[in-house]
Amino acid sequence: MLTVKANYRLLFILLAIAVGLNNRANLFSQSPAMQTSDRQITTPVNLGFLPRSASIRRTTGETDVQVTLNLDGGGKCSASTGVPFLDHMLHQIASHGLIDLEVKATGDIEIDDHHTNEDVGITLGQALSQALGDRKGIVRFGNFLAPLDEALIQVALDFSGRPHLSYGLQIPTQRVGTYDTQLVREFFVAIVNHSQMTLHIRQLDGINSHHIIEATFKAFARSLRMAVEIDPRRAGAIPSSKGVL
Ligand SMILES: [Mn+2]
Image (cartoon, rainbow, N blue to C red):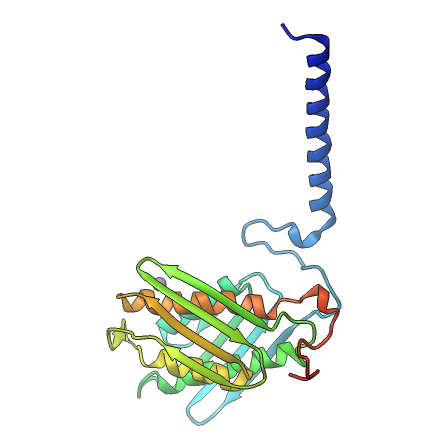
């Protein structure tokens, strides 16, 4: 049997919960960026920097590559490069980087995948650089430690304006499917040079080539997402004590 005092206490607790739930609901309804359901992404909060997108077509005697991206996307991806494993990795960048990404490439894959792989990296790097512009207001640094079963890969990157790659992968097989695993390094060299990024990739563990490469792309994607995020406390300033990136 509850006393009158206990009844009041119960009533008070229920009221507090109801008010709390109502505030939560209001909080979410006021922020359109939070209203996401499944793959349906609404427009993110506009901090005055959007849209941060780019579309670049690069044509040479060896390849024809078109990259369109939106850094403030929701992870939508369409990739058809003629190199299936590369398409699979581009999906990792989009999905885990929350970048909308469209990549179309045709190349001389009758020779091998080298030119197409490299030129997709170059064009993606150029598109990243163009979408970031003068890099005002971004977090600038990003890092992530991605496990994929036995593989564990650490990535740290900086949109420093200085291209540098430290590549620490030891991939045990020469191929994954039809993909030459030496091309992973070539892809990141191309991205680094054309987006003016400092990138460190460390393999802490891993024995399966597919796992090692995929964990690398996931760690890269999450690091990218962190680095290109708008930092509201920067108030649009260039994130460098020099004032230039
Ligand atoms: Mn996979």
